[in-house]
Length: 423
Ligand SMILES: Cc1cc2nc3c(=O)[nH]c(=O)nc-3n(C[C@H](O)[C@H](O)[C@H](O)COP(=O)(O)OP(=O)(O)OC[C@H]3O[C@@H](n4cnc5c(N)ncnc54)[C@H](O)[C@@H]3O)c2cc1C
Image (cartoon, rainbow, N blue to C red):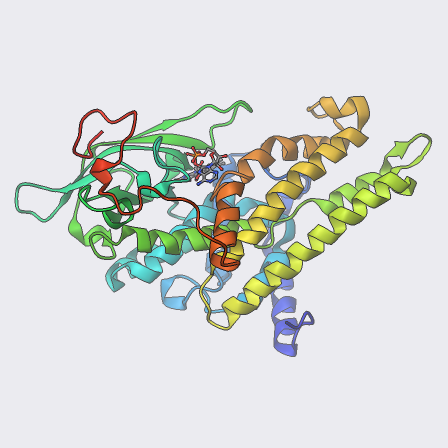
């Protein structure tokens, strides 16, 4: 790893900086500066419109999905150039939220598994933000145990080769404004659970798809329930072979952990600034030995995360695919964010319990505290990531999996309506 820009990288940085300076939506800068992880960045205008406008501008300027090949709407840049871009994009990167799932997870899956004609049709509008994607994986009975999912896809009985899908997904982020979805289904309940899955993509406007937003405690609706009733999907929209959906899903999940974990900010610089500005017993908090000790711990973790992220990027730039070790970033970042936000609110004293425009630091740490538990669940909970690291990175003995070799339809569940795999 070399942390200094090469002459080419320095030239790229200069070009990126100049373009951003000339084109960024500067009128949104004050709002974006106040944004915290999980708080809606833009409120003065429709945030989705603002996000799409910035993404479109980037695409027109040749700055969208930089690491994707040009024929798919990218710019064919190196992973390092992408990191440089992200550094330079700075606060305007907060506008990319609606595209993270599509560009970070669905896009790489389509690129790895779809037919060429589909890649050319689907990827450029995904890169330019004209079309949004969602990830239709989790179900009431298939979250951590994704392979326990029950949404069924069966061949249509009219000889068309189409598939008919029935079932329910849950926690589908952004489904309410998505154009396309990446959908994993069960096509064979007679084989062990990981072996009977098949992946598709589909338009979210397909008849029989119903999206129901879930109202959250914070008043927002970031995710949804999605119901499928006799939804017809052409076989040409299958990704990978029938029964190999688990293998296809691993492309999505590895990219998911990388795109959620890599470069995730733990808000240490913001905490440090707050400790300079906040007084504890008549002196700046940063002078207090106990505060300094805590800051040192967060600083160590922040830099460990930074270098672990750099290691992943170095591997990517050598053409390696994201592996299980990328689970470390999200695991450490999620827990650190939660601990750091709790510490910040403790320092704020009574003001820490207030979350409105009068809150210290514009309520950023309150927002962080409210969001961090979700970070520790989405894309694999802490426990699941520890299992992955234990088993696949450290080589420790595996979790006990009593249903590994049992046909899915024979796995006992309390919610099964009748034997035969269809709940
Ligand atoms: C903000 C957010 C956005 C999301 N967006 C999407 C999305 O867009 N698309 C999508 O498909 N899903 C999405 N999800 C769902 C997410 O992937 C699941 O919530 C997650 O996989 C956990 O599944 P679950 O909620 O069913 O919890 P469960 O699997 O029921 O887990 C409950 C608890 O048991 C623990 N546990 C489970 N199995 C084990 C084990 N083997 N060993 C030890 N502990 C275990 C878990 O760690 C957890 O603490 C989102 C979730 C969140 C929070």
